[in-house]
Image (cartoon, rainbow, N blue to C red; front, side, top):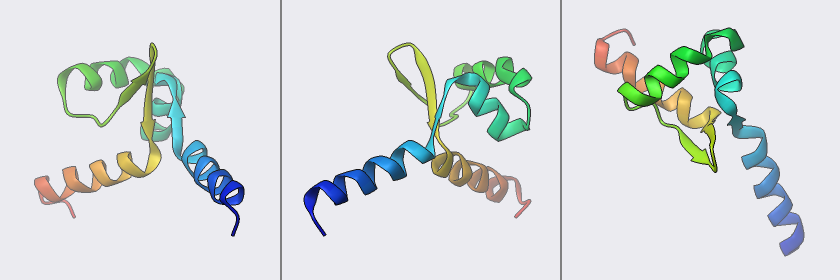
Length: 78
């Protein structure tokens, strides 16, 4: 496999895993982009695994799924 092909595979995998903005994160977590204020609140008050690219709040789908699983285990739900 060529280096260019590997670079594209890594880039495409990251890009498809990336949620950009509180609307996309809210859609992923709550099923509605209208819950973006909840995302901002969680980002400020908890350990929601987010990061910023410039001023844009971002998260990775895979990391959020792991975080939710960990929260379930901590609360005894899983």
